[in-house]
Length: 226
Image 1 (tube, rainbow, N blue to C red):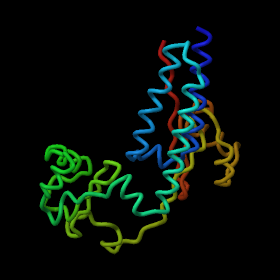
Image 2: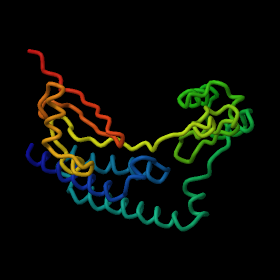
Image 3: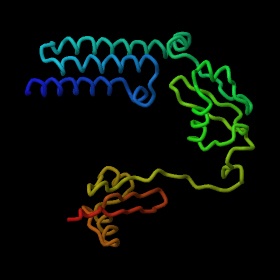
Image 4: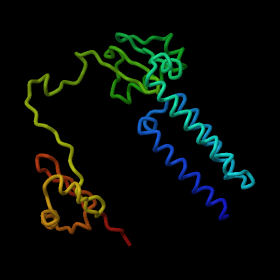
């Protein structure tokens, strides 16, 4: 049992470090080569965990080789447009000027129900309002509406807008984030005073944020019911 636990921890640590090294793009979007690597690694990692007679190096060596190949391919693809097209393909235009390209739909083995579902996920219910829709190489659908069908923005309506600053989290689940507190020019004394106004202590705050306009959002922690 101890051997299996140690093997699991080693494989977990190796996978965590190598995936972290690959970067955030691979975590958010999985291209074809990345999917192949993920599938092979899952199979390689399972073998030494299921059978302790299999040496751990039998999994670690090919896993590291696959990661090196993926890093090399990603680097080459960044420099070569032809290699990118060969490995990852090109986006497919599924909707052109409000009409569905049925040939492209069949080519990508996508049903009309699946296409409409993807459109609904982007709050689009009328195909005729879509100027173009692309099936990207990572499987996501990019939808561009006709200008007349797009929701109006403040700029279109001629309205003045203030810069929207992302609120800083000052307290998260009872823990004070001192770095964010100093970034907004506040101190713990101010924080305790704001918590006291709301009948709370800082340790009783679940979330407290402060935006650029000085607006505070504060929510207390829920107490466990006995």
